[in-house]
Length: 356
Image (cartoon, rainbow, N blue to C red; front, side):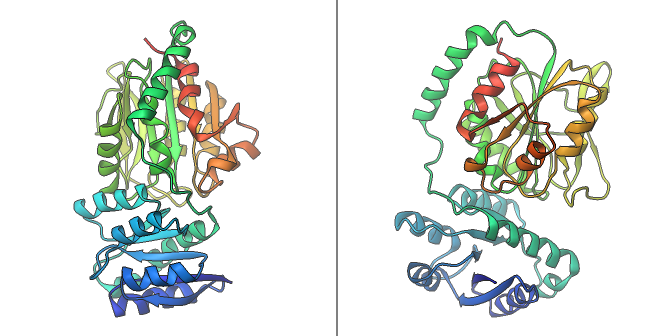
């Protein structure tokens, strides 16, 4: 049985979350803490299979606690329970940067937490975090990394500039993705020959913050894709949370189109839809990249895409994945052309699609 620590300043929320966790026979809440100060003391003494951490708390908030864990080199598998606001989304991005593995957003009222949808999502996320690898406190993307990636681009540019044909890059990521994407997107050069479309499993409101964060670190332009956007080379289009992103032909150009509808593989946006929408596109070849995440989203879509298009599939290797779920599924299905460490994904994309 997996041991869980809850750190939350609301007595009612602690009770509700404990009830949800203890109702699943795989988990047991062994300790609770009222704030980051109590939580830090417990984490210095004990290890847990997962920690559920609130953000806004007196004395020491969730972000400060994550910084203290880094400072003390304490590795813990942390799932944030955050509020769904624009400010909340930005703070959640900070938490993921600081090593939190995933998050759920709590409804405003504790009574809504008892609903089936929230309970199922909460337990699924907790299971992924408990089964994942505790983060090594990696440094954030720096100027040194930019210089390093420029050297790589210069090395591969000579051969990459000879690549012909109309291509596109399509990336899928989930648990651990926001952090992993910081090791990929900022290393892509602004003269990348192709557009990049990207599905990261996240609720509505959070994908805009993710796009802003990646855009601030990158030479390529990164944006939350808007309905009707025409795909341009050297631009990364992140699917909005809560909708399925398709690439369609409109006026002879490849264009973003959103579709409402039920979840698929339990998620919305679903990468399978993005991959399948490229079956009817004008692109000669699609470079599919599958990064860390729980579940199997991407596998069925890539399989279907391969029936119509030339496809090159890059899968993230197990040792660098937070959760080796989605990349494992494409590998087991025999769809992967290359398995690479996270730090090498960007150069393999460049080698595959080229630069201008």
